[in-house]
Amino acid sequence: MEKKNKDRSKRPFTKDRKTDSVSRRPRESARNADSVENECLIIGRNAVRELLGSERDVDKIYVSSGDREGSIKLLVALAIERKIPVIEVDKTKLDSMCRGGRHQGIAAIVPEHNYATVDEILDTAEQRGEKPFVIILDGVEDPHNLGAIIRSAECLGAHGVIIPKRRAVGLTPTAVKAAAGATEYVKVAKVTNIASTIDELKERGLWIYAADMGGDDYTATDLTGSLAVVLGSEGFGISRLVKEKCDFTLSIKLHGRVNSMNVSCAAAVIFAEVAKQRNA
Image (cartoon, rainbow, N blue to C red; front, side, top):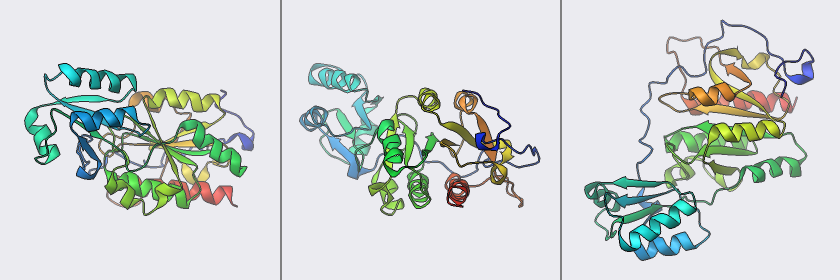
């Protein structure tokens, strides 16, 4: 995919290196990616076996450390076959997560809604007769931020949100509540590898824009084509590999003394510019 073109329709950038970053390692306190909300917890060997045999999406499986014998071993094998992350924790933590419930050494986390696929997100754009507008979140850990981003994405015309399976929050009850109903209308896909997904999107004709420091003024950039906007985690921003996969970098010029914006706030600002240009 050719990255530069002088034709305005190919989305050139106005080079202004004085533009500040969208996010310069935000100071906010990110939630631990392995935190568990009780409403999404399925515990016990029989319950988890039935879950794995159904078509219900599963975020991850927790097993007690060293407990890989008998039926637990079979359940772990089923989870791995379905490419569900399996996390070993000590029994004390599993007891705490299950709040006294009889977990028998295993628990599963399920999302409030089933996830879509990347193809389904792109199909949504095609059905609407619009150029794809996709959001990629590289490790957002706070469910309130995830919910707020999904809400802004729906309000401003995005076709879907892509999140990673590991080291990131999923569609927990808190995230769904923060989205204020937007999860009913915006497809959320969960993928194993964000970098590989970016490669796939490029092959489908999308330009990839990282929202990070040291980039081009987002208001001086043509955002009317097929595109995906990448936002990083609260504590570490966009990972190096994912950043290298992006075609361009967008930044918001900051005028205050604080050197960063909350990721969900920065997302809303950039999404609004995309909507403005597309509906001009």
